[in-house]
Each structure stands twice: as C-alpha cells, then as structure tokens.
Image (cartoon, rainbow, N blue to C red):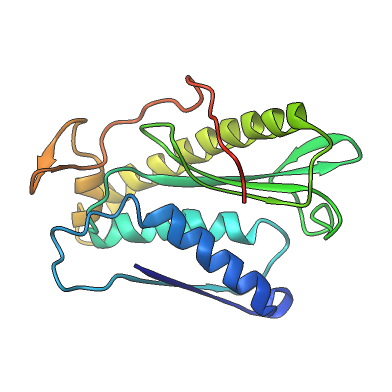
Length: 202
C-alpha cells in the first residue's frame, strides 16, 4: 500500500509530509485485506486544504471512510485521535496554536473493534511515563467517541446515500465474525478502552 498525503498552506514541509505518509501506511497496511486484490496496488491520496490543527488525525479518519465507501475489504476500522499537552493539561484534538512545535502531542490510531493500536506518534517528550499512559487513555477515549460519530454517518449514508446502500458500507456493517474470501470483515461496534492499551510511540 502507498500513502501520499498532499499538504497545502501550513503543511508544505517535506518532513511533515513524509512523517504523515509513514503514519498512514503503518495504520492501514495491517488492516487492508490484500487477498481479494491480487497484483493490485492501493493508493491513498489526501489533500489538506486548511489546517487549524489535527490535520493528521483528520486524514486518517477521512481515509478510513473513503476505503469503506469504495468497498475495500478491511479486517477492522481505523480511527485516530490527537492529544496535546498544554500548560500541564491534556487537550484532546488540539488546535494549531495548542500544537506549537515545542509542545508534546500524541497522535494515536486505533482499531475500533479489536482495540489494538495501529499507529502511535509522539512529537516531543512528555514529562514522565505516567503522563504518557494518561495521554494514551485520553486519546483512546477520544478515538472511541470519534468512531461512534463515523459509524453513525456510515450507517446513515448506507440507507440514505445516492443509489441506496453502497458496497463498502454494506461490508462494514456485516455482523461480527462474518467471512468473505476466508477473511473476517469489519463487524459490529465494540467499545474501545476496555483493555488498557500498551504501546510505545515513534
């Protein structure tokens, strides 16, 4: 899989674009089922038109919706959330001002059904290990809330969208444990955060 986000305005830096592409690739290459697409390449292109903070999180979530919409087979649904650390306070979905270059920021991509961590990126260091654990908890909780919104929109669009139910949405709503081509598809909602995540961030 190849991911190539295209940034405009405040995200023109090659370093940020490269880092974002790596996060995207790491988050999705483990959940996209390649067996149904032999000798194929799946490209994800993303363009950020305006960035007031949380651009990387938004691109991950947008890519998840796009893959479901076009019917790409996936074993789970990837959802992301960012947490900043401002004046000794954790801030979920920080703005661009709160995401100053010298402030720690955690970007977490989680698999919504298995509650596993797909990707974890930490910009700058947090004060201690306990702060890192708390940041993970905030990010996981935030991702859970975002997934509920995304799932609701997917289900609503499957019923009311142009042309009726779409292929990707129908696949995403398949009952848990359903099989297609011998591989499990995305199933019913399971609340995140029941098991405490354990991870190290790059």
